[in-house]
View 1: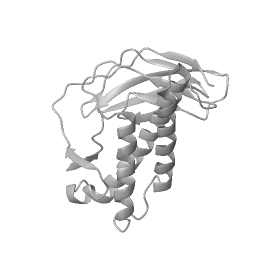
View 2 (view 1 turned 180 degrees about the horizontal axis):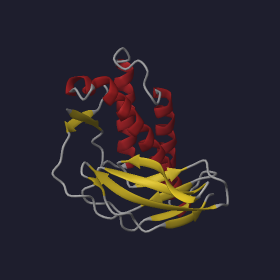
View 3 (view 1 turned 90 degrees about the vertical axis):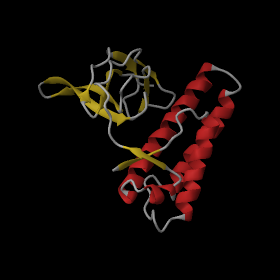
View 4 (view 1 turned 120 degrees about the horizontal axis):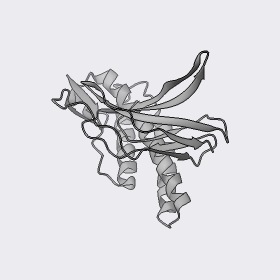
Length: 205
C-alpha cells in the first residue's frame, strides 16, 4: 500500500503557497473524484492568501512579523495534513488517482530504529489570542511528532495528546489567555514511541 504525501519539505513559503493553490486547482478540476474535500477549497485558498500576505510583511523585517508568518504557515500545513488524510481515504494510495489531487505517493514501511529524543523544545505565546506556539529541532527516524499538554484530572494531572503530525512546529489555540501551560513532545514511527523531550512552559497569548 502507498501513502499519500506532499513533497514540499524544502520549498520556500511562497512555493508552499503555490503548491497549495495547485492542489486547489487540481481538486476543483476533479471535483467528481473528490466531492467532499476536508478542509474545503475555500478554506485552503483563504489560508494560502493569509500566509502570502504574512510572508510579504515578514520580508520587511521584525520578529513579530516573522512569528505571525510562522504561525500562519503552521495553520496552512495543518490544513494540508487534513487534506492529505482526506485524499488518502478517497484514493487508497493509488498513484494515478492521487495525482488528480496534485499530490504524490510513497511506499509505506521502514527499517528505522526508534526515534531519537526531540531536542531544543520550546513553547512561547502565539500571535493569535489564546494560543501557544511550539517547536523542536528535527528528530531522526521520526514519522510523527506527538505534542502533549499537562491537564488537570479528577485524580491529579495527566498528559493529554493535542496533536500528532509530521511537522516539528505546532500552534495550539483555544487556551485561556494569560494562563501558564506545560507541554512536551516525542516522536514515533512504525516501531513505537521514542523518548519524551524536556518539558516547556508558556502563558497563552
